[in-house]
Amino acid sequence: MTPLRVQLEQDDIPTHWYNIVADFKNPPLPPLGPDGNPVSPEQMAAIFPMPLLEQEMSAQRWIEIPDEVRQIYAQWRPSPLCRALRLEQALGTPAKIFYKYEGVSPAGSHKPNSAVPQAYFNKIAGTKKLTTETGAGQWGCSIALAGQMFGLPVRVFMVKVSYEQKPFRRSMMQTWGAEVFASPTNITQAGRDALAKDPNNQGSLGLAISEAVEEAAADPNTCYTLGSVLNHVLLHQTVIGLEAKKQFEKIGLYPDVVFGPCGGGSSFAGIAFPFLADKAAGDKRATNLRCVAVEPTSCPTLTKGHYAYDYGDVSGYTPIMKMYTLGHDFMPPGIHAGGLRYHGASPLISQLLHEKLIEAQSVAQIGTFEAGVQFACAEGIIPAPESCHGIRAAIDEALRCKISGEPKVILVNVTGHGHFDMSSYDKYFAGKLEDYDYPAEAIANSLQHLPKVG
Image (cartoon, rainbow, N blue to C red; front, side):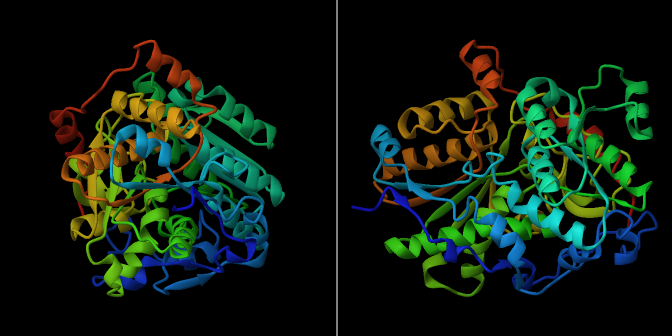
């Protein structure tokens, strides 16, 4: 019988990250400045250290993971690949469902995979302080942890609705020494402007990014860190898929379909990009491979957004990037998967979708919690609301296999545990959650404000 848990040895932690840009047939379009010209590394150096900028702009296929980073990874990596046999039996499906479980990290999610190297490269570059934003708090916790490991103070702007919904994630950040503020704040001009327009503004990732970038840009000793979207963040997360490939090799299987939740794109990229490398190399196992990014219907960036140049934040402080977007001033509803409430998607993921090399689908909030509870009852792990999106899609695929009789191999990235999201589960059990399809007219209105470039 196929093992229920496929573990690797510490020596199997990847020695290099995989850079998917090396396998792009069409080079990614560059980020632009307000003048419409490509942004130079020197301009980006106002908020990022040069080692991370080199990774951001690299087309090198393999980038070495520093020993110091691998030593810290070894505290929880390699993470397990598990077969969801009890879930399969509950569904009555012929499919084999596997999940890569990232909830084993100290922060309880996949986010330290990038937080640790970002803190490391900032430290060796001489950075004295870090700023960042966070939605549901997984990223904020992770960079707070990594900052503590490398002696860097961290200031976190946490989306207000999540700040109120997820108080224990805020406590985790503070335990690791970070300052945490509910965004929008009165600390920055971006925050003050937002509050002047709407004193009850519940915040968004785009707005929190504006606040964090504003602070970093104003202080030459401070750099900005980001938990998703940018190339170097997705690069770091490929340790997930690289390990998963080794684990599948150990049991002689290969996935037919890979699911990952998708907000900015770090967790989807982490699980999917290394398998897409096989497809680009002509590996016969990957000939019919499907990689599916799963997002909320309330924030349908990939499924209803527009492929265009847009800012990564509300105030226009960031470079202009070519991506699927709902418009940088899009204000998503306060769903409980706070890590997926972002108006844009990674430029790399956006290009892959635009070129039809990956798929995207959206799922409704109540259905994701139904899937999360079903998964918890079968497998024992209570997943984070973000993870529930990928689980929902995997269950739906397994049920289609039940009808068709296809014994597909399904892989889903369970990005973290939901131990600090139980208030969200409480609202689900109390019937207080609602499904929400973001209105097409609201998206159209937001898209009218896209920057004019080219």
